[in-house]
Structures are given as structure tokens and as C-alpha cells.
Image (cartoon, rainbow, N blue to C red):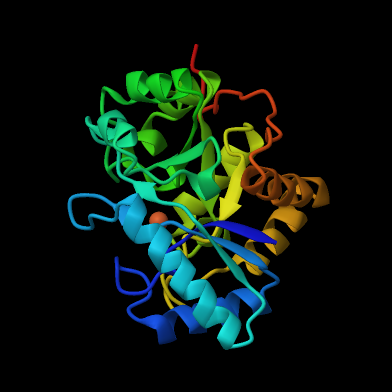
Length: 253
Ligand code: FE
């Protein structure tokens, strides 16, 4: 299994604090059947992780993982919070796509979707990149107005739901919204977004067990396959997105 979203690089964001933490995470990943992890450190106002730092840390961590006898490979990635100068920084080679593929993570602020998002996601696609919106199920505006996400997906963006969200670790509301995103073909990847092995752990095996029981094994294969296709830079499987119908609406005449 491939995990495309993980804060496993040591000491550069709110994930692993040091190499020991990283190795503990890698061991846990191996236990859950994960053989490849894309390291996706934050790039935001708090953490300034540019491509060069990430690439170096990935080489070092792979070395440490090999020495520890753990069968997990780390690939380079990044989790940029959306910002106006993203395209300029892309030109400056400071943005790390997922394993140097055409796929690039985009994180929205947790409470809203900035107005320029649609234009920026479009501009990324004009450059041959495919934006993947991370954890839309935890965005307050998207939860309130899922049509915002529908519109972005309809225009070519992909999305990634977090494994812990599917398992209910972020609450019932986020779990049920994650299910709605799957039902409406509004998500294409399940990833851990693991920061540690405790409160923000991998939960990948648990998420896929949940998905299997609620949606069937085909969905498990689809999500796992998409993560494999992504790291190879191939086109992923997309079903026609649908609008999320508001639940519990009563009509009065
Ligand atoms: Fe993350």
C-alpha cells in the first residue's frame, strides 16, 4: 500500500520531531502494510519547507530507514497551503510535486476556500499539473457548501480524504461527510496525513476495513490503485462527480 500524505520527515514541521520519531512512524507504517510513503511537510506561514530542504531530508531518512532494516521507501512531496505567489515559487523551483509527478497537493485554510482558488487551480492545470485538494472533509466552508468542492472537481481538481476522518477520529460529522464525498465521487485518494503514531496516526488499515464494509471491496481497490498510479505519474481513475444532496430535507406544500 502507498500512503501519499504523511508528516514523517524529522524536525521540519509538526510531524516527527526527530529521526527516532520518523523510524517509529516507518515501523508502524510497515505494520499496516504500507511500503511507500510520500513525505509531505507543510509549506505555510509557520513552516517554510521548500523543495531543496525536502529532497535532502528524504535522502537522509531513506538512509536511516534502510539502516534500521525497515522495508519502507520515502518519496518527496509537499503540502503547500494555498497562497497567491504559489505559481511564482513553482517557477523558482521551490515547490515539490508528489514524487516529481504532475500531481501537486493544495491545502485550503481550515475554515474557508479563498476566492482565488478556482483561478489558481485552473492556472496549475494550464501548466500541466493536477491539483489534489487535501482533506476537504475538514474544511468548514466545504462542509457547509459542498457545491464549492463539486465545482473544483468538475473543473479537474482531485481530492484526498484522510484515513482518520473515515474512521471517525475527527468526529461523527466529518466521518459522515467523508462518506458523502465517496458516494458522490468527490474524492480520489485515501491517505493518512499521519503526524505521529498516537493521536494523529496512520489508521490506513482501519480506514480500508471501514470502506470495505460500507462501500465494498471495489472502492478499496480503487483508492489503493490511485495511490500507485499517482507515484508512477500515471492518470488516476476518476468517476463522474455528483453534487451532494442535502440530507434530511423535508418538503412542505
Ligand atoms: Fe498534512
